[in-house]
Length: 169
Image 1: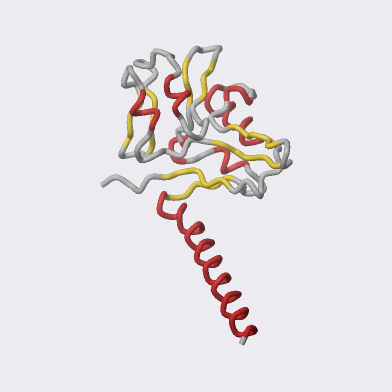
Image 2 (image 1 turned 90 degrees about the vertical axis):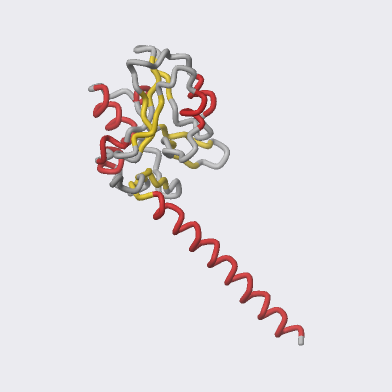
C-alpha cells in the first residue's frame, strides 16, 4: 500500500536567508556546492525584506506532468512524489514554464530540468535548516495549520463582533 504523499512545508517567517538548504541540496544531488544546481531556491522579496524558500509541492494535478510533451514526468505512487525520467527528458523546459511555484529548474550545464525529489525520503534541506523553516510533512498535515489559523480568525472576528454588539446595547 502506498504511503501518504510527503511534501515540504515552508515557514518563510522563520527563514533567515542563509541559503544553507540550497548548498546542502546541490552537494547531495550533484556533489558541488552551487546554489544554481539546487532543487530548492530561496527567493528574496526585496520590498518586504523577507526570504521565501521555494520547492516542488508534489502537486496532485501536477501542471509539469500534464504539460511534458515527452511524458518524462510521472507520479511515483510508492514514493509519493512527482519525478523526472532523465532518459526520456528532452530538456524543452515546458515544465519550467508551467510550474506555478517556480519549482522546476533548468540546469544549463547539464541541459536538463531538475526538481525536488525529497531526497528519497530524507530531505537534506530539512536536516540542515537550523531554524526549521523547512520541514517534511504528509499532505494532510500541511493543511491542518492553515485550517486552524482560519478557524482562529473566524472565532476572533466573532468574539470582536459579539463584544461590539454588546457594547452598543
